[in-house]
Structures are given as structure tokens and as C-alpha cells.
Amino acid sequence: MSDEAAVRGSIGSRVEQAFSECADAELEIERGERESVSRGPRVRRTAFWLVVTGVSLYLVAPSLLDVLGSWRDLERIDWIWFPVMLLLQIASLVCLWALQRMALHRAEWRNVVESQLAGNALGKIAPAGGAIGAALQYRMLVEAGLERGRTVSGITAVNLLTFAVVLALPVLAIPTFLRGSVDRGLVEATLIGVGVFALISAAAVALIAFDRPLELVGRAVQRVRNRLRRDSAPGHGLPDRLRRERDKLIGTLGPKWKEAVVATVGRWAFDYASLLAALAAVGASPRPSLVLLAFCAAQVLAQIPITPGGLGFVEAGLTAMLALAGVGAGRAVLATLAYRLFSYWLPLPAGLVGFFSHKRRYPQGSGAT
Image 1 (cartoon, rainbow, N blue to C red):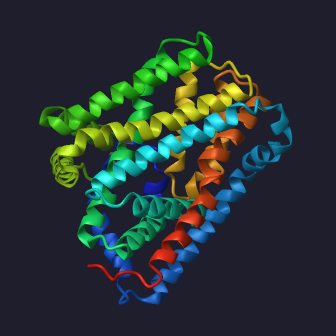
Image 2 (cartoon, helix red, strand yellow; image 1 turned 90 degrees about the horizontal axis):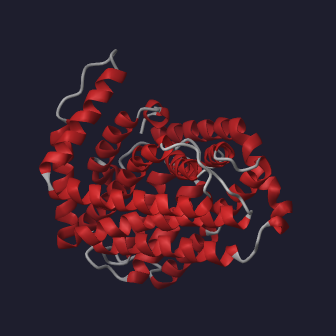
């Protein structure tokens, strides 16, 4: 992924880039396994990402340190919400594991769980970690005996679905923002979230089941992209590309694609609920429309590969958006810390456990092909 694509603010270009990356995922994973790739370019690429990550972390360090430094105020949190946030994050992961298991044609639960935890943890600490985390999960699944082609197509299908929902979240949250700024608290935020995620589910089913909605989306995105990039040649054929990727997705998921859509939406719905629990834990009464937009912004920022797992960018963006939603500065920082504690930091040791558990069972790998 190029530097320009990583920081581009256009939703249209991000959609096109996402499908391009998913279409090329198999080539990228296999390319990473080839020993014929020269060491020099890899070293330069690693050095480049380390420099970019270092500069980015320096720029967002004040917000990150502000959030991390608020741990002294954890005593102000209603601790009853901590087990609730933990259960919601576990539910989110279970949805993701179920989705991956469907995409991998009912692979063993243990293999899916261990590889996802390990890959996710590596992706949160390594520069440009998303691709590295996916490569680690791929290798662990192959060591567990899964066929290489099936593993590549399964990981690609899961990434496509989860990323597509991330991109849809801000768009579907805009109508809630236009309703106004009436402060009705977390109950309305919850109801709005339920409605948005139900709408996402219906839209995803329509896009997968029918050609016409997919073509309309492709043309709209292509039109926006061409208008925003007038200095480059106009793009063509995005609707056809979307249709081809959709067909690959259905081919990978098979008749379980509807369940896969529900699992994908559930993955983000439980994550959103954990943010609401964090706000409830600090006693906040925010503007519900902006809570949803804050969550959307956090998920989009987490996709930016400049820092591992969006570290720093998510903290800065989420704190700022919660403040705009009517949460006091201190409470916004504390709620962000509580949310990131369960969504970012706790999965790291879980990933280490998953990796070593896998290595104990497959010390030499299976050598599956």
C-alpha cells in the first residue's frame, strides 16, 4: 500500500483501494514467502515504515500520552462496567472467529482462534501491521494443515467484508447527525446504533444478492473518485470489479454468506456497544448521533497503516469526537482509555498466548500445501 493511499481522505478512493488490495491478497501473501525477493528492498521498506511510524507517533504523542496518563483516574470509573466491556469485546471476537471459520470452510475453532489472536496482536505492534498480521495468521493456519489456496481466499473474504462494513459505517451514520443535537443520552445512542447496524446488514445482503445495487454503488464511488482526482486519468470499470469481487466472495463463503454478513455486523455492533459501556462507566451523557460518528471515526482511523493499529490516531480522534459529542474533556479521555484498554491492549497478551499455544501443537509446522 502506497504512502499516498494510506493517508488519502477520500472515501471513494479508499473503497477502490480496498477492493484492489483484497483482489491482490493472494499474490502479496505468496510473494512474502518467496526467498527470491532480494534482501535490500525489504530492508529499505522496513526502514521506511519505521521512520513513518516514528514520525507519526511523535506527532500524535501528546494525545496518546494524555490518554495513557489518565490511568491514575481509573478510580473514577464505575468498575461494574469493566466485566461488561470485557464480555462485549469477547462477543465481538466470537463473531469474527465465526466469520473466519465459515470463510475457511469450517476449520477447527482452536486453529482459527489462535491464529486470529496472534495475527491481530502482531498487527497492533508492527509498522504497517495489518499485512504482517494477516501473513502470520496465514502461516499458522497452513501449519495447522489448511490448504493454502483456501486459506488465502478465506482471509481475503473476511478482510473484504469487515473493511467494507467499516467504510459503510460513517455513511450510514450521517443521517443520525442531521437529525440535530438533542441530548437524550446513551439509551438513544444505543437505539441509533441498533438501527444503523440493522441497516448495514440489509444493505450488505442487497449488495451481495443483487447486481443492480452493487452497480449503483460502484458508479457513484467511481464518479466521486474522478471528480476528486481531476489531475489523473478518469477511472473506469469499478462496477465490474465490484461484481467480480462479490462473486469471489460468494464462491468462498458458499451458502453461508448470509450468516457471514450477520457475523460481520455483529463484530462491529458488539465493539460499538463496548464504547457505550465505557461512556456509561464514566457517567457521560453525550449527543447520541456524535457517539456513533465517534465510533465510526475510530474504526476508520484504526485502518490507517501509518502506526500499528492506528495507535495515537485513534486516541486523538476518539477523544476529540467524544468531546464534540458533549462529553467533558476529562471524561472523554477516561472513556477512551477504558475502551482502548479492552479493544487494543488486552488482546496483545492474548495473542502471545495464542501464538505459543499453536507452537506447542505444531512445533515444526505441518508443511501443508
